[in-house]
Length: 190
Image (cartoon, rainbow, N blue to C red; front, side):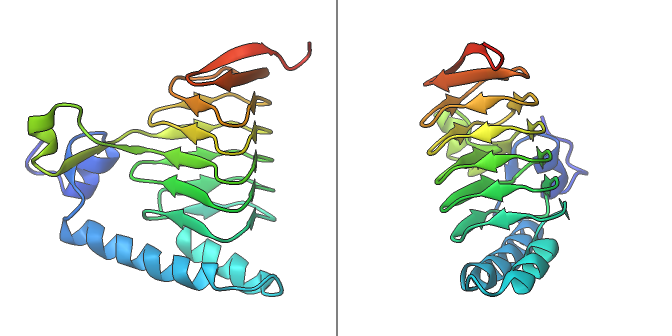
């Protein structure tokens, strides 16, 4: 049972059932939607404006980020990205919990990173309460096109996730992993 003294945001970040319709969370979502609209309307010649908008949107951002519009997220403020992050067209990060992305991470088109999820119990789901679990992506990771990364997953350094994979469990460092569900295929050194 959730602690009644916690705010819905505190519950969300603690991985407890929370209501996304809470006024504080709705205000943060509206802020993100405004910044995303501005970002997604920028042109390829507005690099400084893009960077300033990402700096306002994200919790922390490294050097030389590149996110090709359109891009979507829930709050932005729970996203931390390292240096030289690249995300191609159609990226989605549902950051209802912390999403930490290391340095030199490359994402192909339509990569989806979901910290958010819903209860599997239909009675609980009808209450409108949701859940979220943190995601951590290490350094020098390549994520192929159309990959879905599920809540609570950690991906280790130097790993490649093959296109179309659905990552439901942790993937170690220094491997190539593919499939649905995503499984380790081999070491990166093979």
